[in-house]
Image (tube, rainbow, N blue to C red; front, side):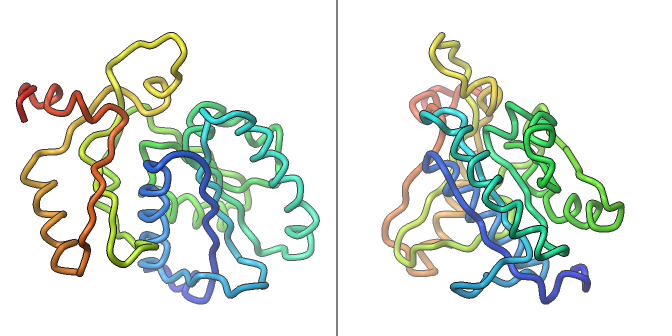
Length: 219
């Protein structure tokens, strides 16, 4: 854990689908494992993370509008950092910095776990960092988590999609379908049940296709 961030506070703002909510729980858990603390109500966070959507209507306008509102706030708080992740980050990549130079870190849907390192690098080098992986490094489920709900939880069974629907951008942003092993899924659910969870929602871009990446459509 980096001692330079022990007392730093954070806020995660999530837009879009349940998968983004799941990813934000992992981002939150990851940050707290690195010593970040949730910001108190009414205070300005040292770090604001936007977990974005590229599917919903006006998703980009919402992001850039919120970023513009943070310009004077960041100017008044020089140590503040802003990170943008999620599907819009995967799509726009470095273009986000051109449209909003106030951003310190841009990371994609495939490398959530890189966020603490990118934040530290940005602080040390005093320049924005952009890191977009083209393929999933590790399932987000392998990262620490902090759930908002006590009795319910999201469990990712797959990410990505192999379909090529003309109206859908998701495969380009989340990549080809990659399924988790059934044993890993069951182990995660057993841990959640032991923690008091009574409702589990299985997540994936195309859960009906689960097993195709494993060579078993009957999985």
